[in-house]
Every structure is written in structure tokens, then in C-alpha cells.
Length: 192
Image (tube, rainbow, N blue to C red; front, side, top):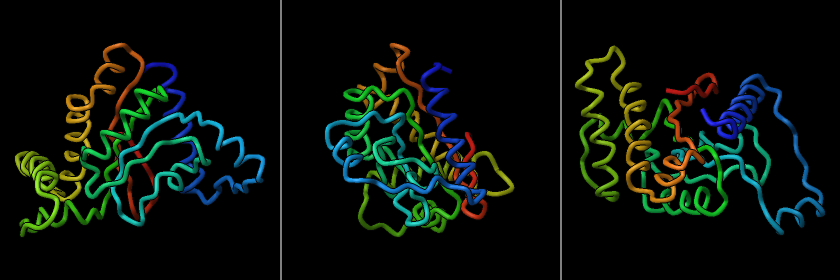
């Protein structure tokens, strides 16, 4: 792994350990700090996560304001808004790490496992359906969990193809992209 990406990943995982062991850094922001942030930012990573109210990357990774770009979309799929966020984070801010975080208890995955009944989302629902099919083909002991993992991996591959900034940064060895799973019951994030 690239040294800058490894450093960012280590920072995120150390923050996750603080979060899940009940020792987060309690932060207060003085007006001076907010003024500094208004003048610029130096994020270490970009995270594509689900919109689930229980999965807030800034909290789960115990990161301060200005340290991570976040796109939240149902099922942590490669939506246009997530791709745009990455064009800014990777292309403009040069973050060395992109992480796609799936999570246990994902409602979007659950809907498709239960048989998609349609509704808003169209092509984004199809993206999750590909992951569900892949998970089913593996005949896992826990289909729900495997579908969440395959969906995070599928989003990584789609972002590598569909985001020019991500593709170029990976090709130029300026960025890495990884998939992860957030365990709702324990608060632990681990790479998958």
C-alpha cells in the first residue's frame, strides 16, 4: 500500500478503535479553529458510506472536521453524487485513500434480498442487485452479510472504472481504494 494511503488508513482504524472502545477524542471547536477550516482543508481520505443514520463515518472513525470527505447514499453505491465527491476529493484535494464502507443491517441490501419491489433509485438499485446475485452465487452461510461485502467490493470496482480522478490517481500511484465492512453491533470496521 502507498505510504500516504497506509497512514490515512491507520488514522481511520485508530479512530475506529477509539470509537468502539468508548474513548473517542472529545472535540470542541473554538472560533479560531473554525476560521482556519474556512480558509482550507487537508482531508486524509474520502469515504463512500450508506445513508443509514447509524453509520456516520466522521463518528465511526472518530475524525475531526476537515479530515474526511464523505458521500452517503443508500447501499453505499457509486452514485453520481459519490463520483462527484471523489472527483473533488481525489482530483482536487489529492486524498491518498478512498474507502467504501458497507454495513451490517443495511436496509437497501435487505430490500433487494427480500425481492425488489421497485421504487426510486432505478439504476442504483440495479447496482446492488449485481452484488446480491454475486453473493447468492457463492452460496454463503450468511447471505445478507455476503451481499453487503460484495456490494462494497462492487462499488470499489465501479468507482475505479467510472471516476476518472480515481482511475488516474490509482494509475499514477497517488491513491488507493479499499472496501470495508462496519459491524453494527460492535462498531468495528474491517477491510474486506
